[in-house]
Length: 266
Image (cartoon, helix red, strand yellow):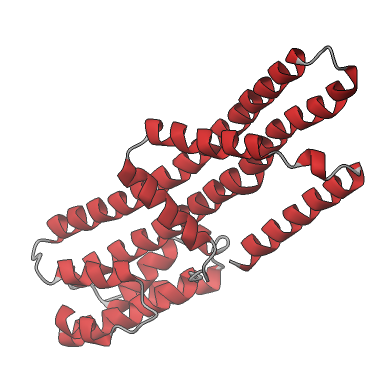
């Protein structure tokens, strides 16, 4: 959230400085151009997608400006190993009682599904389907904002064309050509700023969050399925650290891998 707000503030400051340097602040305010860009992007987005997709995208955009739940993969593996120990002693029903507020909603729902799915393969299939749906929604939200980023400069150009048409209608008044042309070009400016300061960055933030979420979901699925299959906590932890070692920042050192392998032996 903080980086998003800092970026928006910095971008607004750069634009404000550029406007002030022109010495013609009044000429750069074009209500007609704002209406063409914002209204056109909204209209094209509604034609391009349905209301549900737009609602999901707006919800995703709100999350960009809220405090982000940081996912520490190493801590997540340790937490899953801790829950696996509880599952070994008390079963999956006992694990559900050990969940705390900082645990991910996906982990909670995965355990709910695990308690009613006796077949590990069916459990994996159900969890992977749920994860794919959530990932699909996030990627679609990212794609929608990226599409809006494509639309915005085009509607800025349309606004500029309308302004040029108005300039050509007043060629008999040479003194008005310069200011009118300057005003016409502001529509293109609005479209470019709207695209590159809002739409594209939001799309990238949502996609980045979706990829991180996908990593977390994959680790949770692997751990919960192994808990349901009755694997030992040490083996579950070693398996997660081995499979996801590169996601934790690079290859594991030999001593750590050896220690995990010794712990995983039955």
